[in-house]
View: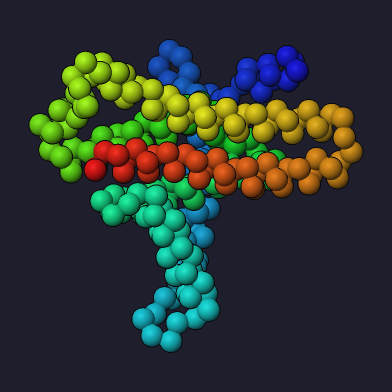
Length: 227
């Protein structure tokens, strides 16, 4: 177990070492895989939305529109009426994290198993949460919100600004890392077919669940911020 953790956590994360000044600039594998995922998603979107029409739509267009309405309904339902303007962003994050979590099916390491990726996603989410609160309440009411329900707990409310992104990033990172560790252990003690079946569960079902949890918590924070 110790050797496995060392292999997963202490491996060289650099995809390429680029000479920069007197040293090297590391381009991480997680960044490259994330770019590949983004590129594939963009190409898929361009292919699926090509030739859309207003009338006499194709089955492909009907399926894509149904999916968009469904996922917007999922994220919009979590955000509530006041936060519904952010449903498209949350849907995009949900799809991106799902795709990143599922690259293990193709033998690649999920980018979400790199803390730098989960930290970046968490910071983006918390910045959006606070920006939504500022937009809704204004600067004055936003500051007063830290003293609610009583001024004495203001330090705790301020501390929560740091706790929330830490909780988001560590939850996503920890669950993806845990699933990877379990799969590696199973591969050492089980026949080939059984790990392959479990890989479908961890890479697809568990990956989708972790993406949903991340988006659900972010949406919950936004809903609280705009109330």
